[in-house]
Image (cartoon, rainbow, N blue to C red; front, side, top):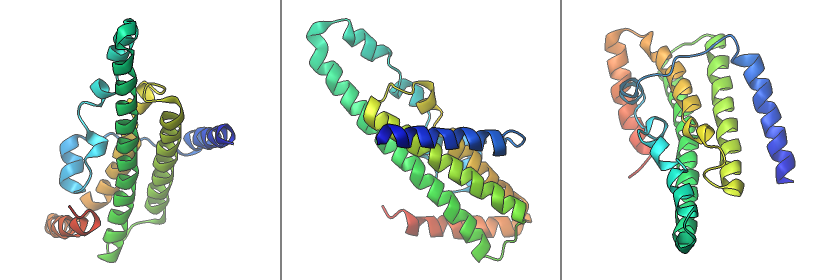
Length: 191
């Protein structure tokens, strides 16, 4: 059942890539752009994900049979961390969507094309993250290798698209909206 669902999700992912992302590619924003424009996003721009999900140390431990308990513990810890990180990325997609709703509630108008673009990017990001979560859950943190390291890219692209909407506003309005959003995001993620 899980294999069928994974295959189905992968097929939808490929179809989405072919249809929607072929002609439009948003640049990946720098960390400072994402954090200053859309407060509340941090997992998508995590710095040392490569080191965390590298399997080099795991393979080195595999070469020594007496370290098998440590190897098992590291694999379990990294799996748990990867699942938590992927879950946080999914929450960040919801935060970006909430940001889009926040802009609409503050009388910020967008075109239907921009709305569809952000909606498709959000669906793609959630589909990709769910597929990655399923693979990590069943196959472990080293199954995706490069794919897991790039799991934050769809979220960064989505936030870049939402940030472009805000960048169209005059500077005074933009500053006011950023301040209101910073207060609003605290209600979304209470400490």
